[in-house]
Amino acid sequence: MGQCFTSNADPPNRKGYGRGCVHRGSGDARGALRGHGAGGLRSRPICGIGLDPGFPWGECTIVRADDIPGNNCVAHILADQPCLARETVSHWGEPVLLIAHPDRYWAEAARRHVRIRFEALEPVLDMEQAARVFQECRREKGDVNQAFRRADVTLEGVYRTPAVDQVYIETQGMLAVASREHGVTVRGSLQCPYYVHHALQHLFGLPGDKVRVVPCETGGGFGGKEDYPSMLACHAALLAWRSGRPVRMIYDRAEDLAATTKRHPSRARDLEAEDLVQMSQVLIYRRGAECAETSQRKTILVFSAFPLRSLRLWYARISLADLVN
Image 1: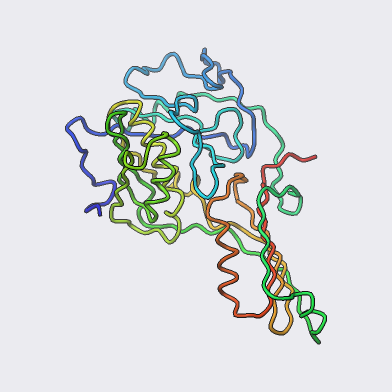
Image 2: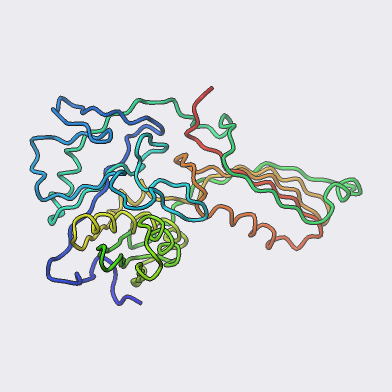
């Protein structure tokens, strides 16, 4: 177990840490990357990304989707979430480019000198209009139809829950050391080290004994540091792998609130009778990312919460980034 918080951890050698940062997608919820600069810069297109030729890039380490040595995804329940966007962005704030520099100020300055143009696509921002289901699960216990036929009274309701942020005291943070010879080691503020271990194996194509995950003392999590630290670990490790130097990546509060996953807003239709429940529940990922995360656990939790003889559950996830037809 680590003995310090991520922001206070010492580098494992005298070279010190590079400071990593992420260039994210635009304010559009959905768009296609275009390989042109913007804002009057004479930028050269690199996988749809333009770099300001007037900025001193010499000490920067840059990682794009094409630089990933293994699979471009943050593997979790499914291998369905891109680590870095290559051609399209599917939600606000989706990571597109990684930058590291020995100085935190210059890392942030470099990020501001990257230009990305998008072909904006019209998103769906209302759950009532998003008809395409990209993940669903159905579970049933007992004979629900017969139970309803025999019931004298039934109750029906529709319930909604808002998005909730965990607002842990310590923001997301990760330290990474990586090389082809020694593999990948990360230290960070996280709740589920085996999630991170699995994601790093998939990203780098490494055997399990070449990946080491060390949890530091965690300054709060409440579920907010279950799956998302895998994303941060992948980003920090990619920069360390490419630069040959340790990399520290810590979100400030604004980025943490804007970029990380939340407890998703939901709409649930509930139909109840004596000793049985039929629930149809739809959960929406707030930023429209089409990835499973830990959401499939909801079906297990519902079944364990109701001590009933009959129960039917339909759970689905729909994307708020679907195109309007």
